Image 1 (spheres, rainbow, N blue to C red):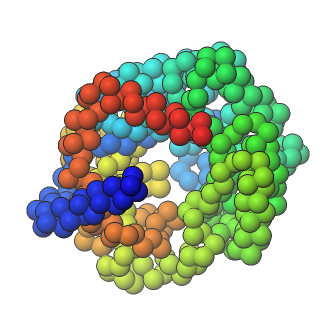
Image 2: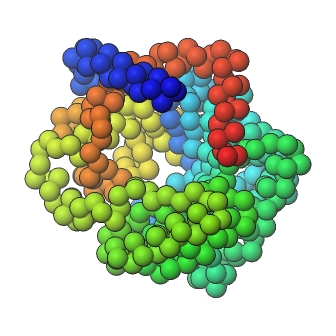
Length: 400
C-alpha cells in the first residue's frame, strides 16, 4: 500500500508538472532561479596530505592558494541558510578538519537551521575532541576518502598519511556514537576507481565492515594530465567489473552497502566518445541532464561563488556582493540559459558526471516538478515537529 501511495503521488506530481510545464519552462529559460537548496562550502583549500591523484598536487589545475574560509564569508550566507536543505561542508582541494574549531563553529550554525550536513574528509585529523563534538552537534554524514586497504598502498597513494590513523579516527567516532546514544553521523568510505588500487576494493569493503562503516562507494575517476591511463571506468573496464563484483560479494557477507558512482560507469558509452558526440549534438538527452545551477552553488574559501566543483568560473564574490545578487546575476543566468538551450560551456561538455544520463522522467520534467514542490517543502521545513521527525528518520535510515 505504501508503495502504491508513493507511485500515485509521483504520478500526480508528474501530471501536475506537465500541466504547468509551459509556464515553468518560461521561467527556467529566463535564467532566474529560486534560492538554492544545496550548498557546497569550501571550508579549506589547504590539505595535510599530498595524494598522488589530486589535481592540485600534480599541478593539473590552476594553483589554488592554501586558505581557510573566513567567518565573515560564511556569515554572508546568513540570509540564504533558511532556504537550504543540504550543505556539503568540505574542501574542494582541501581537508575539512584542517582547523577543527572553525569547522565545528560552522557546523553548529548549520545545524541550528535544521540543515542536513555532509562532510568529505581524509579522516586523519579527527582526534578525540573533534569526534565527540561532531557527534554532539549532529553531523549527518561523514564521507571518508580512502582508496587502499593495505598500509603500504595507502602510504604510497595518500602521501603523508597513515591508514592506521584513519582507522583510529573512525573507531573514535563509533565509540562516541555509542557513548552519546546517537546513530549519526553515518560513515561511508569513498574510493576512486584507480588502476593502482582497484584490486584492494574487496579488502576495503571488509575493513569497512569491521569498523561499522555503512557504505562503500566506488567513484568514477576522471583522467587529466599526470593521471593518464589510471581511470578504471575509462580504460580498464574488465578489471573494474571483476573487482567491483568481488567487492559486492564481500559487502553481502559483512553487511555493508556497496555502490558504483555513477552506477553505469562500466556499461556507459566510452567517455571520450561521449564528449565527441556531445560536441556535435546541439540538443540531446545528455545536454539536458544537469540542472545544478538552478538548485546548487559552491562557495570557495576565498568567497567566490561558482556553479559546481567541476566548473571554476566565478559568478561573483561574497566579498563585494550579496549571495542573492550573485545567484540571479547575469553570469549565473547566462549559464542557465545556455544549459537550457543545449549550448553548455566546455567545462560542462567534459563533465564526467553527466555525459550519458537518460533520466526517467526526463530531466526537464523533473526540474519543473521540483520547482513546483519547492514552496511546499520549504513551508514544511519551518514546522519544528516535522523537521525533527525528518532528522530522526534520516538517522534511523543511516543506522539501518
